[in-house]
Image (cartoon, rainbow, N blue to C red):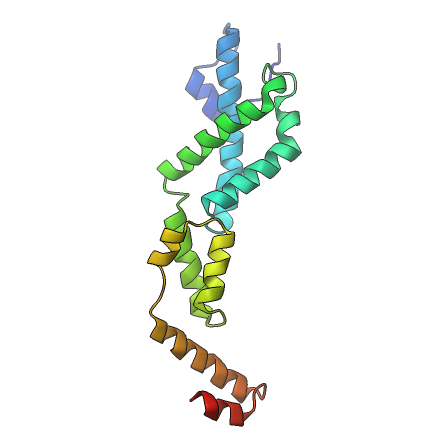
Length: 177
């Protein structure tokens, strides 16, 4: 009898084979492990595009629950307890990603600051606001705050570039310097 499609990871984890009798408790655990693995794989694909914060992953999982949750739990004993199951799976997936060093707010914030500040088009205040919007803790953000003299150098460099492109008049440049 067909119950559900499962990954090879789940088959190996539970020692499944054709003809094996499985209790309802084992079926529930297999279902949770399969759901956990399916969501984990989606999160890894998302993180593979660029690093993510824990808050971004939580938002993504909330959207996933809204879009796919009922379909994925239909026909299982968890269909009527979707929110409880989802919270359990969410915490398992996030802890698994953190254990494997794929998800870290500190690493994400460092990467974000480095990329935004390197381009020279955004200052610290703008980058700090973006990090706060991404759900990064204020203490983590404060630890990454750059030296204020670097901000002035970046501002002067950008201003000179704008003057060279004719965006800003030379007279204004003399006031800055």
